[in-house]
Length: 177
Image (tube, rainbow, N blue to C red):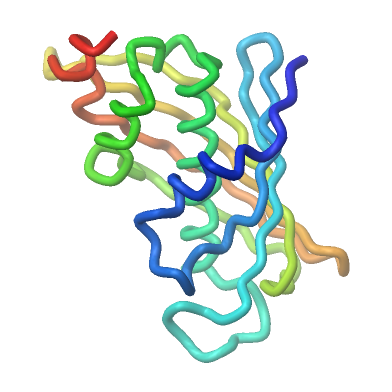
């Protein structure tokens, strides 16, 4: 098992597209073991970026937190060569793909107990990552992932997300490897 502590420079770059009041991810420890990649993260939402304080983590912030966690884990996986499906990518390829080509195909979640948005933890895991060419179309990467959030008071939320990485094998990315 290999553990990667928070790469603060990489985290800063991953969060660059977000508005300052919407950078929730504070740290991320990525673990790679037997081809599986996961992360345990710390979050803090001082003030919601879109609504008055609800008093708990809400669905929109769950999704934003998921995105930040996932973007960081993918970037770290590319940087460290942790997943074979991204072996042709450089970090430059990742930055080019981050916003336009990483799509949430399906997002599901269950709220078990309210979570304090001011301080909570999260976990992200790649369950399966595959290269596909659906219907003979352009190849893409499909990833099944899971997430879980919790806080010190027993708050809990979890779910699964299917990602589609489109244009993952365009000529610029393949030519760069």
